[in-house]
Image (cartoon, rainbow, N blue to C red):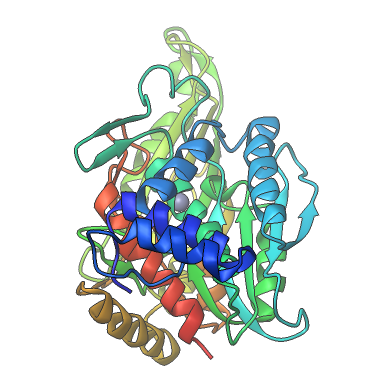
Length: 419
Ligand SMILES: [Zn+2]
């Protein structure tokens, strides 16, 4: 359980490798050299922060914006080769609609038909190619490590692999089979992998999501649901000077709709709406005939998801001569901290205490993840188990190096104790 400084861990790992293949005399020699001035170290592989970071760096330096399938697939290739090396059984589903492949890895041990632990991570990031060379150079400043998508969530994704590798190195297995699933387009709502996530979750007793930890190591036990809508308003074009009275302004109608939509925001109830994108009009001297808006909705419960969605879809034009059409709906269902999630969290909290940190949960976050799908299916889901840090999607996106080993340890302990 205790972590050793990195120099020692490398030694211990080499020792472990040697121990399996060398006669006792050779081992004895190495041990006596390694422990001359120290107390005897246990001869087992150790979770090594420097090694974890080196692995994260390899994955981070392959930039992978969601919409660049080839780029995302380069990380998928790397993850696949890492997983193949440790004997995991892989299933790779080719990407579609311009997205990368979905990679599923089954632990080298365990029965494929048995319900197990599903680890979810995504390999895409929101950062464009080139961020690594400009805005998001990989760099380490004290405890902070920067890089595109390092926090959300290459660090967590790599830690899933690293935890599985840890069991292989130890020659140990877990009670439940472990499956890791890497999603290529989580940042755009997982449109092509949702069905695969649902199928994998049906075969899972628990889901562990390696999205970033937050606000000082906190994990996530409840997430709001996310809705997305497109409102199209059609008016009537006319010369803005000569025939103004003949026009019907779609933008004027949009202005009223925006106020109505934004007016649905209710912080006390946890509802937020955001008209985040708007386009419309054809010229400054033309009464605009069209306007299109994109709307983001966040809601904490299934009931609110249903009622607010119905409200937005039912919005009518104020101007009888304009036409308002709304499409869309809930993209990710909300999930609350139900009994199964609370039990899983308490279990993780106990393990974290043994490791030496106090695991808290964020009461409710507005950000969605693939955990929304599995938790809404009723599978106990614990999210935010990845690296701690700050600035997801931001210019200062970073992880805290000091969180890597304790979080990897927590993940290993979860895999080892869940039944
Ligand atoms: Zn993420």
